Amino acid sequence: MIRTAANLRIEGRVQGVGYRWWTVETAQRLGLSGWARNRADGSVEILAIGAAQALSDLERACASGPPASRVTAVRRTPAEDDGSDGFRQRETV
Image (cartoon, rainbow, N blue to C red):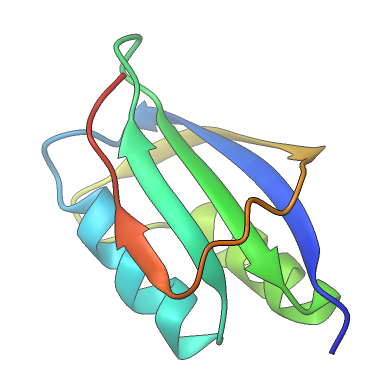
């Protein structure tokens, strides 16, 4: 499988509502590697690595997020594959 990487920045009410945990569960279900972390500006940043279709599926899912979230924007940019194996949460930056 060819691994593609994308950086997603999620904006809105996405901290304190289980968004990172939800992202880990969703990304693992899609077979993606990478990580999710809170940003000091209130957004969530995601590095997702895997099949192109799975990345698109994650991007679409992120537009809704978990029930308590209120997503106002999902911004996707190309990224470098950092070699992540599995998907996990990271510390806030």
